[in-house]
Structure formats: structure tokens, C-alpha cells
Image 1 (cartoon, one colour):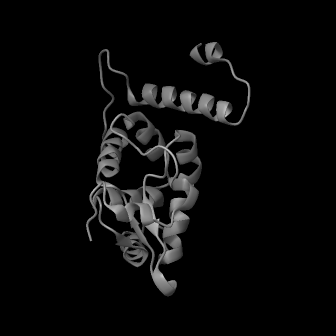
Image 2: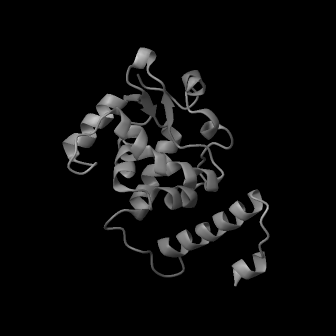
Image 3: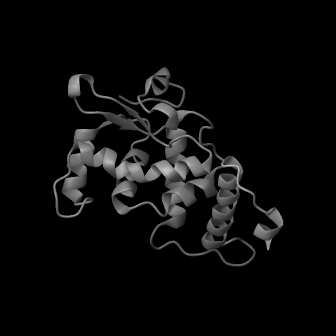
Length: 177
């Protein structure tokens, strides 16, 4: 089943508090790069599956089979629990980004497999992030910012945002320096 960006099924997810707040948008490329690039390989692998099948609901059993087939979890066979475990590293960075989780999930009925999906607009954003941070990507030359410069600026911004959200004192002037 393919869902478009405004399908009402997105709001029937089981994701809880992680899906409250601001949705990812076209101007969030640097945030998407900052979230995607440092993720563990198994987490990126699941993101890649969802990004490459935008709006398609993928079962945790199918994702686990793909993980095992490609050995995205090392030497062991993946199972349903491997999917949610592999996605857990997204929790902290998504909170710092100020955006909701980039993927949705629905609990399976009667202990059945859960479903995972990424909205088409979000999948497009993260495909660009993957392209801009993946192996073989070359840094731009000339007046453009390099990926490392963008990443450093976003990391610094997210550090200030985190400090502000947690009531910690910080100095914008010191961050600029």
C-alpha cells in the first residue's frame, strides 16, 4: 500500500511523542544531513529501505529479512526486534533537530509484524542527505560551504538549541567565535 504525503493513515501511527512537533520540510537539508550521516550502518540501512520506497509501508519481518540478506546487522540473523533496536539511535538526534521522527510506524495486530514508512517528501529530503554525505561525495569547491562546514554549523546550532530547550546558559557570541 502506497501512501501519499497527506494520506490520513499517517496520523494513525503508533509512534507516540516522537511524532509531535514540526514535520520535516524542503528547507531542512542540513538538518537531515546532520541526522543521517552519523547514524550506525544498520540504522542507515533501514532508512535507505524507507527512502527508496517512499510512502510504502514495509513490514518489520520484510525489513529484518533484508537486513539478514545484506548482513546489515553483522553475523547474526535479524528479526522483528532488530528493526526497532536498529532505529533507536535516531531518538536523540531527532529531538535535537527540533523535528518529528522522519519515519512512522504502526503496531502489528495481535502480535503481528509492525509496519514502517517514510513520507514521500521526507524520503526525498533524506535521499538528498544520503547523496550529500555518502561515500564518494566530493566537497564543493569555491565559495560554497563544504559538507563539513555545514555539519559543523548545524551541530553548533543544535547544541545551542539543546541548551536553550533545557534551560542551560550559553553565549551566542562565543558560538560565533
